[in-house]
Image (cartoon, rainbow over the protein chains, first blue to last red):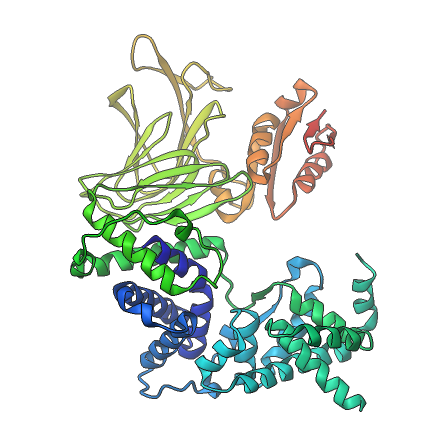
Length: 175
Length: 367
């Protein structure tokens, strides 16, 4: 059981954010993720046949979240995703960037199409592979690659247009 | 051509971010990056840690989530005992399986490990397992006890509590400082044992400071009521009212200011000095005794020696006095988010005469 609790500790923040993006409530998301891990614990003997465990956990989170909305369909409605729950930015405590730059990047991410933002988050924040994101969102790995490139391009352009060159140069000359 | 190259760089950066890039593509990316400094900057950003900006869980939040989850899991198990009784093959789970660190560890393995552990556990004696929570110097933590009581643990402290409060009482053991918000249950009194005294409550909010390296222990009551008992004589108890505190000098050590101290005879060979007083309120109505719960430090007319002891725990520092006399200076101040140096500088600015320096081993010397 300790292993399950450790797994919960490791994944809960990521899964709660993912669920909250669908349900629009961190409170509901917290219960969903806890319920999911209780279910995993109870079904542990059948889990050995699961091919992609991480995808399985995310798919379960997605389905439970959609169920909680009273929806029967199994597809995420990207347009109704809660953008706040997906919001992220480079950690300014790493001191590579200023708060100002972090805010610009966060804003640029919020302006991405919702599906693109979700894909970016699942790769960067949750550490999922192309294949895992593809399995979860039922799209091809190629689409994941393309969407991630779009996100990165958009953010880079923000950096080029909105962030003064001195700021960028000062970073490279710091060391 | 320019356009194509430019598009290519984003795909390569995307693949690098997702760790889906081949060795050949890495070389290609490095060539391209030399032409686009802002893309190089982007690469650095993608390399570093990112955080949630809307709702970010810190370690304390996660610990609280885990505790809540454990309780729900426990409740679910109570109604589902059949599952863990299926097999009799009980083997201890290899240590290494418990210590996995990466996401790569497959659920499969974990499930197997958890399954084995579950069976082993169900066959064992169901005696309450003792949980131990300890904080390092310079860090604080929060825990939700199985009865719903909230405990904030200050730096350099430890709390022992059972996994489940069976029996007629709820008992925990504290070394150091903690803030308790005890869930009300008049049928099951809550006891906090410290080396100086034991506190008995039913449902209330209070702070206890009982570090083993300090010469006194203090219980401060915010609201509700508490009963302070001394191990030597259980009949001799002191009831505290809200906004009162009780300072107890450790046996054989007298409190600094013992004008009002009442020597209480608990036994012939040992005297315990206790002092009852009001809790300390700062100008901005912060309560000094519990300021740490709000991540603040507050001192009102406290000796430099005691303040240094608090700062050491708070910042995980080592502070020593070159000039003994400086220990006796009485200082006042409230701090929130300041560094140790900023705190010391603030004391200097308010007219306290002392100097401090840091030696090569990081020890801060006051003179």
